[in-house]
Image (spheres, rainbow, N blue to C red):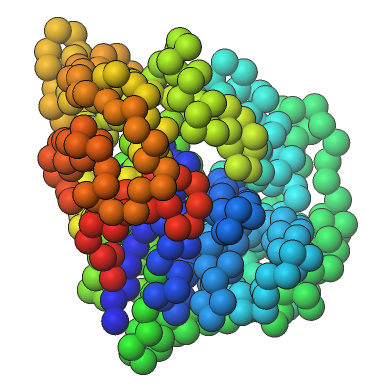
Amino acid sequence: MPAVIVLGTQWGDEGKGKAVDQLGSQVDYVVKFNGGNNAGHTVVIEGEKFALHLLPSGILTPGVTPLIGNGVVVDLEVLFAELDELQSRGVDTSRLQISSNAHIIPSYNRVLDQATEKHLGERQIGTTGRGIGPTYADKMNRVGIRVQDLFDESILRKKVRGALEQKNHLLTTLYGMDSIDPEAAADELLSFAERVRPFVVDSTKELNDALDEGKMLLFEAGQATMLDVDHGTYPFVTSSSSTAAGACTGSGVGPTRIDRVVGVAKAYTTRVGEGPFPTELHDEVGEGLRQAGGEFGTTTGRPRRTGWFDSVVARYATRVNGLTDIVLTKLDVLTGYEQIPVCVAYEVDGQRLDEMPDHQTDFHHAKPVYEYFPGWTEDISQTSTWEELPATARDYVETLERLSGCRISVIGTGPGREAAIVRYPLV
């Protein structure tokens, strides 16, 4: 049985949660391999909306084991609030597993994150202020707190004291804030130890054993390709690897065991936070897309920036991830437009570029080169087969397929779990 990666091809919010959920009944494990509670997935099941922030989407599918991998940073307070919310709605959360090597977001990193972003002023990155970046920085600086540290109090207290020695100096000297008591910070973390203990596993062994037994794994990315810390629009990116390679480092499953890489793309484009966005619309058309698509952050509630489909970004995502399939979401949102623009290239200083500029400055100054395609007026929200789509909608999908360089296997026609057209099975 295959191991499949599902990831975003744009700047996030493409509908990865729905794509994962639709595959849920066919897989044994859903593995979140990067990020934290700085991005959310919205899944609609029989008209009931579930907003997931830290938990893998597989938590909603009976029989599936949801696993938080070592590449994730975990806010324990958020974790248990989310678990309590799902349990109150009748969702069985007992199957959850958490890697012992996953790093924990201590409350002092939330304080530092918000203080740093405020201090940047006009140079703000647009972070969610949830301590994600500082926790990944601690990981790389080798002063991070891992889940397994909760079960050795002396080690935990030593690590917290070491981390806060530098952070308190920064908070008091640069930001003019009060210092944080390391013993109180350690006590707060230790208060979660016994509750989290039943979920903790050796995730690398768990997942590789599952593959050896013929079980199917689905790897679910947080954020998206253009927010990847290496391959995204740096520095306006997240703090982790959200491309396909991140699934391997964030889970401990080797690349030779991955069978399919599925990219999720909206039929248009959105972005949250700061940073370049060549096809962004600043007019009533952009606001219309925002309202029709419900483009407000699952985690933050922030309005998303909106624009037309960018095939340069799509080709780039296909290349850096080695995509085998694309799931195209929210095609129904484009119903009613007489013409639909698609960005096919950029213009930079009078020169046409058909591929992603290698230099950040060029991307900041890129202007979209559009081609226009006929729209449709028919309601497609109840459409269940490719043949039932209006001819111009099929032409639009085939155009995006050609421009992206990857086949479009599934098409989303509405928010519900069942609102999808499957052209080619993903597994």
